[in-house]
Length: 378
Image 1 (cartoon, rainbow, N blue to C red):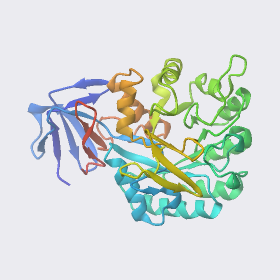
Image 2 (cartoon, rainbow, N blue to C red):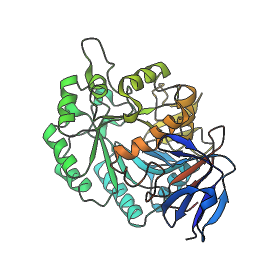
Image 3 (tube, rainbow, N blue to C red):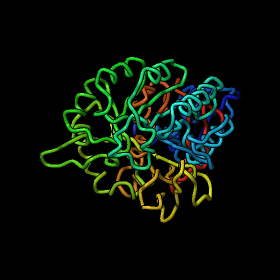
Image 4 (tube, one colour):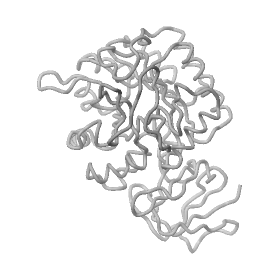
């Protein structure tokens, strides 16, 4: 692979914008940063036109894209369609997310992810099991018929170490802390969601190793003055990361601003919760036996229940600036560095630094994606 020097860009380095610097790529990794006048021999210069050169976005919750839901994926070509749809919006690593389904289907999809990881499919970094170990009282669009207790078969499936990064969303009140601890010991990242857990139940799960919250505020009780609940426990636990859907529909911007102010942006991460519509002109699709319709920037069932989103990561970043009043560098950190840390991959990706993966995105002044690279390949 050719050595490249990306020049004439506004580089995001350690939270600051730098100009006059060249980003050097050698193979799959960032080889270094140097003044543009000092680019070593053997590097082909590529002019970035003054755009923003930032770490690639990492989406830990993407249900589908390119016309495909992970729940319906049949082969590796379907996984590639999902990843390709999100690459167009700056996502260089994602966890395809499996919505509550049967055990047989979970095994089939895990086999696809296992094959994609073995083949190093660009963009596929693991899998997110959103359910089925949830609370039916907060199921949202999840199929209640498939919600069930966790068993040792699942522990074996996710503990094999061949699925890349594995995130499991569960309701803490439905899974005992000892089992959460076993999952974490096996390398699984445990997140709380679709839950009615109280404050003490959530704190016990965090003590057992739970480290995330799936779509903060959605599918969980509100925080109250004398009942802080799951949300209060998450916001008050420094080790806990919170994913949030920043589309202007799932959560009011003022509510998210309050969460960021309480938690700090270093533990708040943008997610899309994207459905099959991303990267397409689709206006409707089937989620199991439910008809989902896109209208007014939202995806809903016939009764108006929100069903994932049409959001992409570039839009989530733009919304963090426009709706949440975040500086662009902070918005990008919530789309790259924070999810990398949540996945335990901060030493591999999520920022621009020597020896990290050359997963990069070039943005224009309107925060729209112009180019992107995964492991040095555009």
